[in-house]
Image (tube, rainbow, N blue to C red; front, side):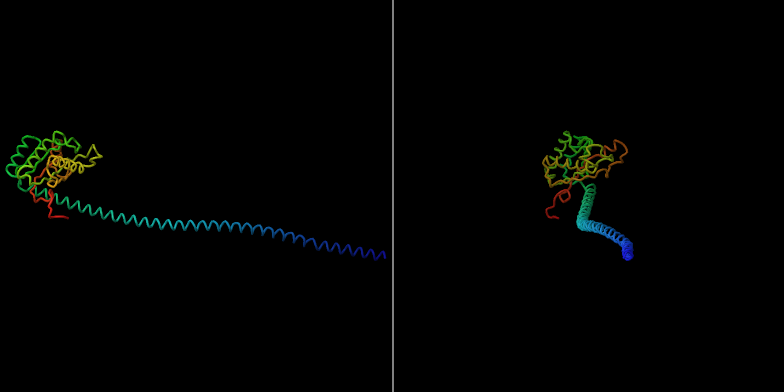
Length: 280
């Protein structure tokens, strides 16, 4: 019995030892599997979080691209509208340049005709203009063509288009002659000229010699209108420095070139007057 008990006890011990030896690696593998599973789960959670963030970023990018596409379309429409307005402006500018060229050509032809034509005034009116030239030394009159010349210095201060007070009696006397007798049917073309010097003052009013020459001619026209000559009998023009009487070599020659000319024209000179039968 003792031997039997000893054998049974030894068998139980061997069995227990064998079971313990068999269970230890399995437990380790189980724990390792559990740790691996937890790691994979954590990595899965991180990947899912990253996917959510990437999806949000992708949605934001898509919205930005959509907004940029809309902005591009709007800019394209604005560009097309700007190009259309630019084309219209260019066409208007071309039309204005063409019209200006036509007017300059008409004035040029008129001046050439005025300089070569005979004096359209009667003998009485011519005599009065000659007396006016004797009365005012800085006023010149050509009895053969009827062209009058005012030296600019008698009419205006340097760089100015405002008439001197001393010039107004001369213009009143001239207007009185043109409003008397046969001269009432004649027209006037007032033309301003400058020397070759650039504008040194009053730039806001006369930025260039073009502005100064035309503004001076307009001042004379308005003074003649104030003295009683009807507007429809008059025209004005400016030629800047482009029609000098003499080369601009010194102060004396420049003084001669600074002038205002008045062309007395026959009634059929429609540039200075108005032809009611010719309406554009």
